[in-house]
Image 1 (cartoon, rainbow, N blue to C red):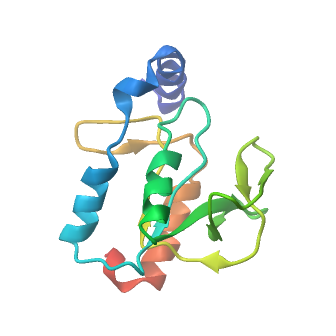
Image 2: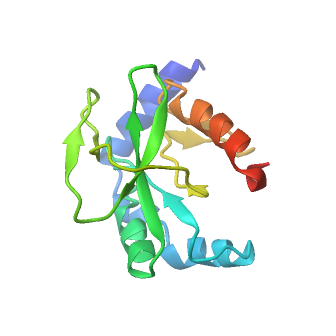
Length: 149
């Protein structure tokens, strides 16, 4: 099945699915971070959920309460995106895709990114929305941060 057809099919299913059945658990993510011996200086990148995506704002809120720095992506005109420092009280603006994003203030490079997706397969290959924004971002971050390899 073509990716675009699969993507549309899954998005329709997800629209009617109960999001409570797909909730991520903050403690599991925090355990993973602790396993990697990351410190409070670790920067967590999230996303603003749209299209019935898993709501990661609860997870970001917990990280923020535990004094981790959090950030959200901003899509740029050159079909790339960067992350900007954000906290739960900061204002957001709506981008051309209807996604809330931080008002550009402080460019930041996350150590960990919570990535939205449409689906994934048994080999954990991600099916996104087809724009390649996260693929380009992750490649850029790999070059900037040593431990991303």
